[in-house]
Length: 395
Ligand SMILES: [Zn+2]
Ligand SMILES: [Zn+2]
Image 1 (cartoon, rainbow, N blue to C red):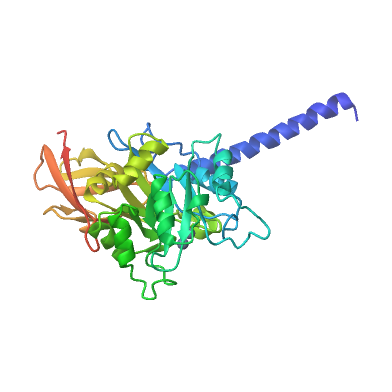
Image 2 (tube, protein in one colour):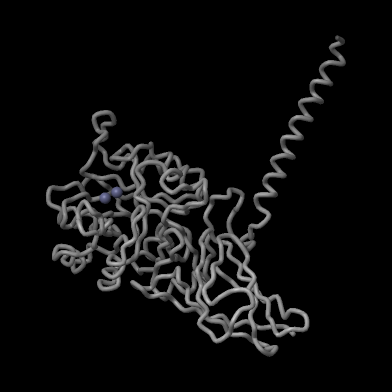
């Protein structure tokens, strides 16, 4: 065959193949996103489906953080750069590498007398990303005090001490934010009930213990939340991941790791640290938001804005839309006297969806006041926030 003819034909075929393949991808993408609400325009990049999204609050950034994880530098199964890649893929803003100082099961294969190496490698691999990496370590002791994380440290090595009190003292001297890890862990609390011993109270008293995990890996603890409220500690939720987050949380099928939402002035380590000391956090775990009123109510309300569509023709039925751009499912209970045309008093708003709500207002009104108990919001054990919406209606 004539080569002058063969090459263009071959090129044409390849081009056709590429084009059809691209169209297929576009079609799939379109189909997949058809029912998904886009977050507000000032928000995040949603190009990767699994990236989590939370709105910022007025004058405050909502920073999603995971302050507890492991690599091969203690008992984890991955190199630190994988922790960075996972966080970037999931849309996490800030992580801390927190190797066990005292437990180094891979040290025969990976000798590392310098306990800062995991942090240094993670930080280097995050250099061209927006991910903030914070230096941390897990102080790993018998109960009491059990396990604790010290983050925002300068040097992990001097925190490796004989006496646990010396470790806390050194971490505090470095300006660390220190929190109790998994106080409900059944290896150290057989009944799964989080509790504090006199040693913990001494640490709190000496300002060497500032927060507590109420969520660790797959576990939530009402008792840990109560301890946080009783002793005025910061609420923290972490993955404590040792393997891969994709497998641990089934992320390809819509799962997510727990995160601590930190409400900080800016996206930088200094203000994140300040916000932690000021207890400006809400923990997100599965579909639960756990936090103090001051931060829980605003983040819930911002996460689920309500849009007024208007009255349906010739009726007193007001159509509203609840717009959920987050990856959380909301469970709401109506606490007003209104009833709905399609829903009962308890209803669900699915992740990344818009739900229509038809309110029977009896007569046409200028303003409608709604009040929902957010059953997936937790202020204290068994206590859910009730949130008001005052909505103007155009006639
Ligand atoms: Zn631990
Ligand atoms: Zn751990």
